[in-house]
Image 1: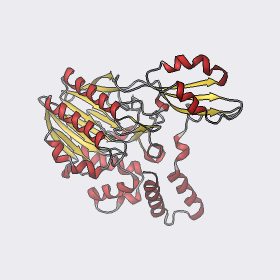
Image 2: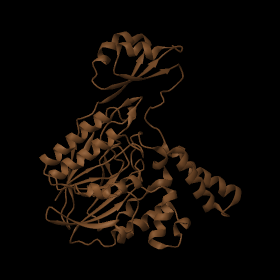
Image 3: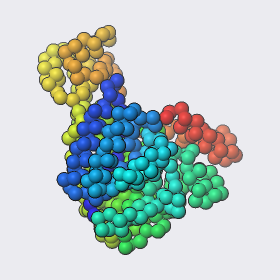
Image 4: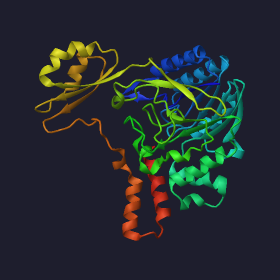
Length: 387
């Protein structure tokens, strides 16, 4: 069977005030054509179909048209909710999506309640384990569904994730293609710096050992840079990356999806297929005295621009003046002597692990007394504040 694996569409996302829904629509049309040309049997979308929990009608239209198109072409689809999606909203339309051959899992469900299911795809028996994104707050409820004893309050995020994966994959055997969908961060993953940082920090990472040997292929989402997983065999687990260059931290990176050939009891074979739709992003660093000389070159760039202009002193109104000559210019950053650009490579997301910092603070001030409850409450409040 042939599988197309994609994730992190972020339909409805804007960039410095520009609505990019038209670009995602073009990318999804290209993706649908690829499904037909490659004769794909199954499309898997590992979360973040949308950029927020209340997407625009135009964003929903682009997504639904894609599934209707590939369903008419004979391909089935499996989708899970990511950290940007509304699990409840996805579950609410699951029955309608099912009419187009889409199997949607929004909120976490145990194996016996729809989190694990079997499909017949391309003549192959496929066992699917679908694990949507879970925040620390929602994880307690998910673990209660499989254990019923509030065990998640006593264990770490990764320990509980291991239990949930174990529950969903317990029925897998070597006679079927075993497919695991997850929206999470694996240890050692290389970020594109456009991800939601809080959900990519150390307290939200899981080890490669969480993927059982029985899994044929782990279709992952959440990290926007295409890559495999350190510690797993080549091709056993992949991040396909985002469908568009989502912000200027991804400028210059190529976009792709994974096409994988899967057979029961065999190692997967895969290839990356480029996605060309959507405007490219460019970040240029220019000295003030070079602006006039480089204006023509920058104006010819067909995508969206961000300029970092090196100045000796602040220049009020610089962005407005430059935008008259560069209609594709979205952002201008003024860099004064001794300052560094704010989006240079080397950003350390672990530095913003507020939950871990709060846990350490409590340990120093109060020891273990009441720590788990306070950390869980803090994580919940932080989750509400930043989403």
